[in-house]
Length: 227
Image (tube, rainbow, N blue to C red; front, side, top):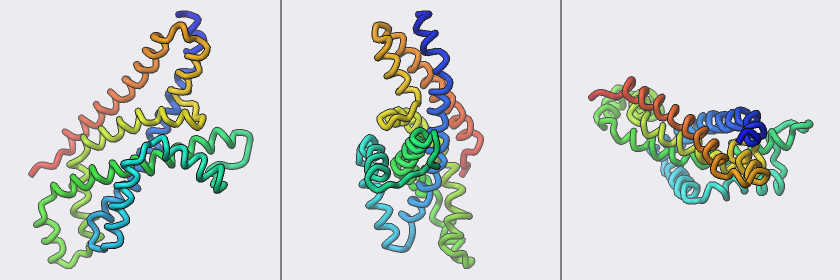
């Protein structure tokens, strides 16, 4: 066990820190893109509603592994889309950003549907009252509907973020050195201690996800919409 810890211990924090960064950056991007998609789905413009509906239905039902591979093989290797500067750490940074792009495209669909369910909790009379005093659709949505909708879905958004944290393990297939890639590497060199390796990585993810759940649980109680 001591040999395993000597091999694995120094790499644990860098690996899980990369997992945390993937979660944070992808979460922020998914929140922004998911909010835009939700606004499009409730928009009075048919083209925008149609685009958002088709996008959500297709991407949400596509395996995340395929989306990650599409961003790496399709966008970068075939189309030449590079997201990092051409330097000594190009491959590492580019794969990291391609993984974030894939997670944003995928997770935004769940953010969209979660937020749309929150929009449905806002009494329709509030939107009608806002329109009656001359507010435009963007004003009604941004100033009246969305603030209440977001407060109503804090807890479900926490579940989406926890799922995103778990999904970051898929980034290992394009060489992003997060926690699951460390586990794979250690299994190849210390396969006889497979249970200990699984346990260490599982505990790390458990700490992260329990912390996320506690934060979002507190926030949901703190900012709950009282009607």
